[in-house]
Image 1 (cartoon, rainbow, N blue to C red):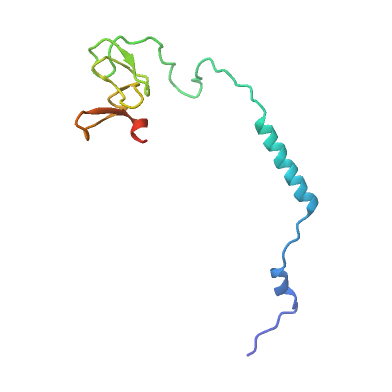
Image 2: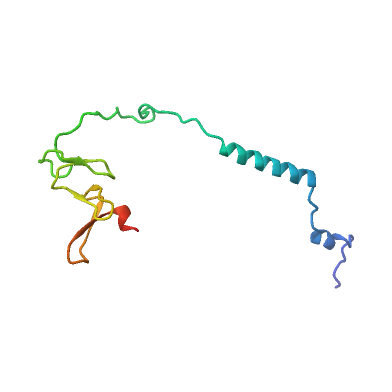
Length: 128
């Protein structure tokens, strides 16, 4: 049994043809891109949000009263806030980063024991 031939012999050539670009459509796309780039460079007005919105949560807003006890040990008076998590800690629970000299709690810092003197590094300075 022989194979049937295609009725349209130009069918194979249609698949190999390259689609011609329309210069008007190409120019319009370039103008749209240029307009978007110019719009992105314009200064934006910033919206100032007074306080967070709690309309999507079933909870009441957190009270804004400051605690007078340490977040970790609960017995010391507050000395300073952690630079990363902003929790209130006593002087025994905070440590100063050896690289950036900011104050961090033990959760947001790591002690490096590789040198002769122990050094405390915050998580961002440790990754550098």
